[in-house]
Length: 129
Image (tube, rainbow, N blue to C red; front, top):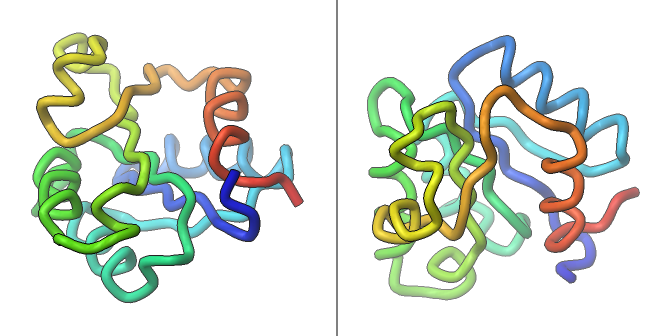
């Protein structure tokens, strides 16, 4: 477990961002928010040791979640290259671990969001407060 590490939630949809934030906050997880792939990538580059997991929407404006994940994987240094990245998506094309792995991600969380699924996953990488 990555003690002291936060969740980085990259989500452009305000309602989903709010719901995910509420789940993380309710269960005591520390987290930061990114509104698109570029902001997520910039936050990882600026603070590579701060995050235990990235929860990333697949479809975002500008740099998509897929492109951001691939860029993070190509960073060439640890920890960004090895940080767990999970797709957050309603897109059935990404509801398959092989498909998301090919896109630089480690797994996925389905939309609509299930609080138990989110907290079970996050607790593997970040401590609750």
